[in-house]
Amino acid sequence: MYVCICARVRECEVRAAIRGGARCEDTVGEACGAGTGCGTCQPRIAEIIDAETGANTPVGAAR
Image (cartoon, rainbow, N blue to C red; front, side, top):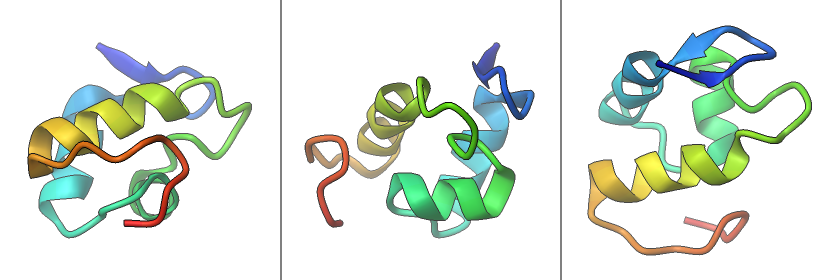
């Protein structure tokens, strides 16, 4: 399933970026391109980060 349509990034790619060390929306974007276009997917990226890391941090908050 696509998380970021602008950059055509799938959920598995976002999860791989997080498992590789990305811990915020910006570092996920640097790793795989997700969230670097219109930004509509940023909340979903934050949810995936929380699910992968066990965190519960609001979107845009420093991690």
